[in-house]
Image 1 (cartoon, rainbow, N blue to C red):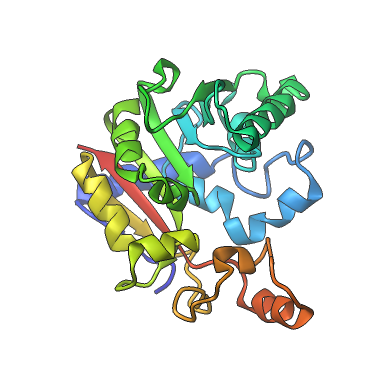
Image 2: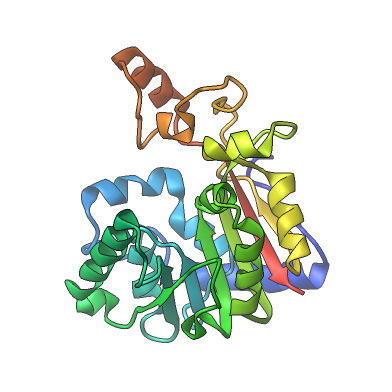
Length: 272
């Protein structure tokens, strides 16, 4: 049952099914052109399942999609070619005027990546994302907002609720929000789990609901029951697992390699 999908009303189920089919056509793993992607990034496909994930979220080639905090652009590499002809990709990155050296370096590197391959990324729009500021106008009237494995950072900064409010403002009425996030078991302290990179699903759903979203579907293809980072109190958190493997000795590295990548929730919300 791990690959099952829980869907709410039948009309929504049918609409999503059509969207999944549309997204998969021409954008599946076998037909995708990966010439612009590094071998290391392509190797992550097996675990991150990007094409299955985007199909589950119903992303269509004609959509305006906002990618929240794209980092180095791992998902941008897949979204940009998919959307460049009929749709639009807006990369909502760290603010251009950030005073953080880390964030400035991250954005500068991302923009260089785009500038160095205009055939692939020439139509990508880069916008500011700051949960404590106004919504960047470039991100508004979106069909889809996507956020991948970054909600714990917003929680750590006390900005999760304001970020979800912004996601809502970015979307058209009826637009959708796709979330992939390292998932903590229920019952653990949220402050502590977020420091390790994890959030419980109930907390994410609660914050999203308060921001004006309805959970319409859940995918289980990113679940990993072998991930016991939170339950076992592993100090290094999610970064002890692949691909980071930030551990002190080879024995731990081999142990966590066998666990694989993190247990992740895959949630699809609709703007009410």
